[in-house]
Length: 369
Image 1: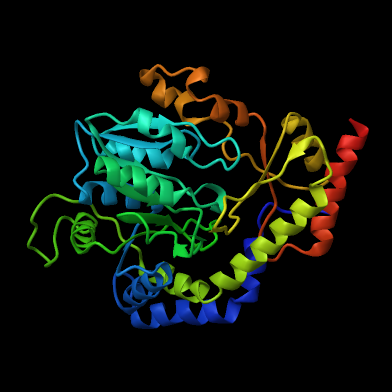
Image 2: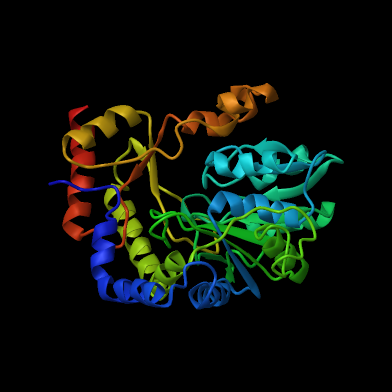
């Protein structure tokens, strides 16, 4: 049996008529830039996130950089974020002119360790970017307490956590602002690049929309130099279709994760995901840990099972951040886990037979090793 890591074709087939109709409407109305599809999606996604505003942009990385600039982050500032994320989170900080400050991940939940944040705060610190990694919300109640104590802004990097929640609050509505990616493989994915900024803050929303549109609101009235970052009409139309299904797909992902955890709980050589109290995760990724990661991954590949590693190098260990002069002892868990984590296939259309085959193959590997 062959099991893909993700099957976007299966998802498309399940909503083909809806997607094709939506794309055709964009073509018929030549609504390629801005227009009703973008406006409708921005409204609908803001409603899903329980926020007043949504600004569609070109991609998730742009979303972080633009939101930071809209909050006034720039040269001379410091922004705290997780040591174990994709580089988009940290590079967006740097491109504003600010300095990135890393915090290790929590040993159980993989999101930023909130107990380690305060020791990294200085007089230059202006914001915290918790990453809702793998679709698991970070501990926002504790992070918001810290932010309030030190008068810091909070940007939720929600690229992997569409419509998840903690203590009944929707991810994206808790901090000052939140950013999303609609990369095709995301839980809510476009058929190309796309991103969004959501917020309840009117001023941040206004400045974000201006930054994304050449520093203007009116066509030729530029108040400052911005960038050109837009969610196009076709992607917005596709996302509008998918948004109707996101809650069902999220529930299917949770069910798959539950089955995985139940079937693998007796395998002593691996660690399955733990959930922070009060969260409703959306399992963008189902990540296990094992000391035999590479051997297991190769064995699964031989058996036709595709897996991934998210992420194989902790951010402070990248050459891009060698100037920070960090060592392994600065981020012990992020460094340790980079060689242990393995992402198993998870997508709403994953069948029970496929899950059984994956789990049986994992058990077989440990029986033979």
